[in-house]
Length: 238
Image (tube, rainbow, N blue to C red):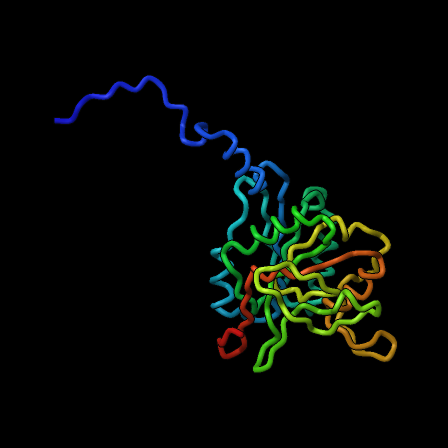
């Protein structure tokens, strides 16, 4: 026969070690504003492997999150127009972060949380992205540009397992951006543009942006602990 127990008071698991609870809250940043707008340009159908990974994406608890699809536009145009609309909205313009996910990227469940934490810990960076490679055999990491070279360059540089690697430019497949940078009137508009001309050069929308952002002191990096897949038309993830 079970014995009766009289319990007068239990302060709870977390109250038994307040110092540990404080440390956990500070580390996870749940008391901070970590509001985030997710922007996904999708011109065509999305790979199931990519879309299913987005369903599992976690965000810090009790934080504002809005998810926006930009459909039927070229990717640079999609980003620029969506950001313009965000800044024109009195509520969305207050959000702290923007997470870009491209339609062919397979993302880790804790990727957004990790990138936010890196952004909070490294205020010198305007953008931190996850690590993914260009598609195909011999694909290179999208860590563009050696920052130790005084001449601006976008050469692919090697990842460092588990580390934060500074660079001159990122891909946009899984990036956390500070929304405040897009309020800087010094930055060229449209921010993102795909070009192929003698006057503007040949750039994908991401590096077109960084050629200008670097001039105004903005820095970026890749978090090599956030591993992102890049799925091709046959469903193979590079």
